[in-house]
Image (cartoon, rainbow, N blue to C red; front, side):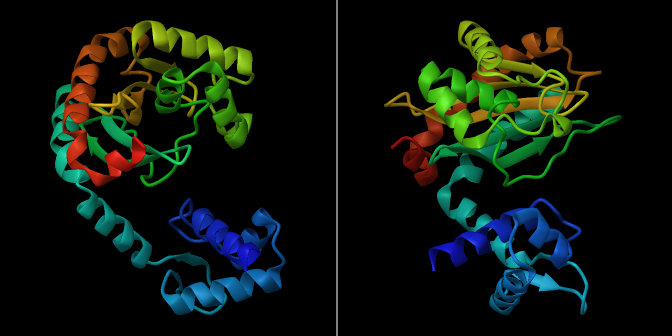
Length: 262
């Protein structure tokens, strides 16, 4: 039963990365699951309403059911009530994408965003995904709040990622990553360029629980490197840190943030 559940969850996570859907054979091959077993799992997920198939032999895609569950949880958790006004204001001030990730169970998941770009290039990745810790500013900000040993353990569990899918300046070794983390600790926030995605940049700061000071989330500003160079990111850092402090002050009102602090 555990193996079946694991496969079903992996299918859902894979479909979450493909809004246009994926054919059965692609999912089976990607996850190394026999096609017959993949077909049975997808049939059950379709029956339960979590996956849909528009036509016979057509691609499978997630239904709105999972989205509804996630939005319902966020509404009940208080995260959006607390965070969205802060994110909206920071996005308006910076003219870039602002995102909030929540820390739980050794993962950093983006749960809220505000888009401030009003013209030109816009960076607007999917929400609800886990941040790649070794290459993102969000990941570096969180890892920098931990000991080197704890940080490397989290990265070892997730991996450094496929270099072909990352930017040319993404850390490839523990030594390179630790150098970035030391810089983030020294300045109180993390900065990356050409790391998680080619041509993109981001600056991020940890949100801490107001009582325990445990890291419970990460707030970031991200955008094209053409607009968001190192000098500008450092200029934006005070506004980012102020917004993170504001989120920290209101965190006790959210059950999700309280859970992250445990």
